[in-house]
Image 1 (tube, helix red, strand yellow):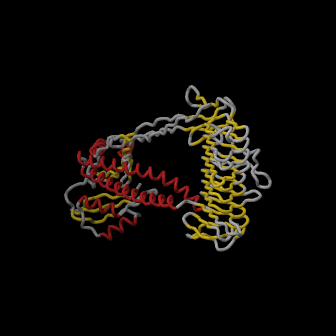
Image 2: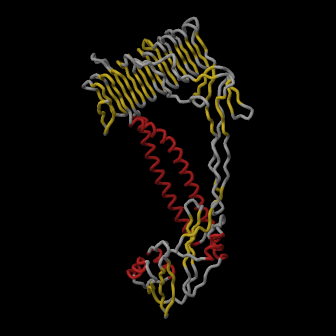
Length: 529
């Protein structure tokens, strides 16, 4: 039992009887006592005496609070509604020693007068009537929460990890015979399964207003030719033996388009919806475009290769300052010379010479040579090489981490979210105040309209905040990568190399060996590996 109080009359004076808590019940707060006395019109008390009597909570005490008004206070009930309008708590105060008790019908009537229409807890009210507990929050009404549905889900039965690394030989070079980055598929093989969405069910708050369940996300298979879907639409099967890949949420299966020799005047340019295998070289001036992967057994010259998936060039690219590789996934290549290579995933090679290279995640320059010399290279997270630059001071630029434009967008979103949160908090407080005012004075059509308008505005601002939070989270993940961005040098990085980490850049004045370079306290530092 909580500590509570009761107004009583004695010889024409009013006293407040303060009853201590029992069995671990909660103690009173003096503000609650003062609010009750203010409501009942008794102000002639000694504040210190009253405060001490409440604080001691050890034995029953009676404190003088003024001349008796002649009015016997009835049992009182104060209601509090949660911010989401789903819970109504009642806090009851006893009648004065000759006042009247409320019955269950009166409690229900007061709830209804306050606009509470849904979820009145009859058992809780009956329990109070049987065993009256005062100065305690009692749950007298509870809204019907919505039943949330289930989003659709697609499970792919092949590897969709775009960062799967190739196998390596003992000397660190790539084993092109067992790359382990291509998904082989047999005719009739199941590729993916769909669990369809399950719709939710709306709920009602205590004011009998509808609370809609969260909209469920629907999903459908997106796939190209050579694939069939089961009759119930929940499974995908390959119709051919070939390669399977997932590109931007779309499943591709293709028997490989094989070029038995070189891509040159005998074949012309190649544009294929699946995977392309070139047994020879790709000659200068020609173009190979594939929605899947491109594998070149020989050398790429000053040619243009563009793949929705990976690009693998087993003998490298002599770009002649016009060769270009662009992959939606990773690039695995023997060497890169005088070319532009762009990958949304990682790039692995044995050397980079006078080239422009961009890797979405990691650039690894390993194997026997492992050098970067000349040109500009960039990676989202890590650049790892044996040597960078040269004694001759060849202009070389290496950079890792989030670029300045993306970083500015990140901080802009951060500020917008803070402003919207402040606005949402203000609306919540105002809404709560209006609700409490409506509880005390009763609801009117005008007050109900104000509450509904504020609730609608709150929902809109929360939706706006959710949309920004999704973009912010993606950039935050990129920033976390940026904060751990490293340039790792297992041999030597030479003086004259320009090094950038996120928005900070320097020209090295000295050479360093077996070192890593990263940003610390706003500056680029060099530390041993």
